[in-house]
Length: 113
Image (cartoon, rainbow, N blue to C red; front, side):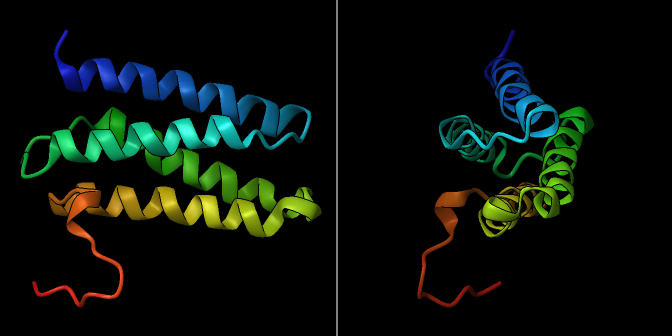
């Protein structure tokens, strides 16, 4: 198993640990989300410049952001935080699609494409 496959498995497990409680008992576990974000950032580094990316990994990120955003209205006290979480996952997803990593983005510095 290569690094990307290993990261993908870890990411899937982390997503399950966050999403299942979110959907079933309406609990937002910040540590579980932080793990998802950390693994997604690592994945973006590993996939940087790679033309061939696993559709299942992309699907995991896309669906996770979609689920988080869909659950936000049902947890009023956490809605803003969930929207932010979904946005972070979508940003990483977009960077992977562009062949970039999270390290390429510098806050406050314009991007030249």
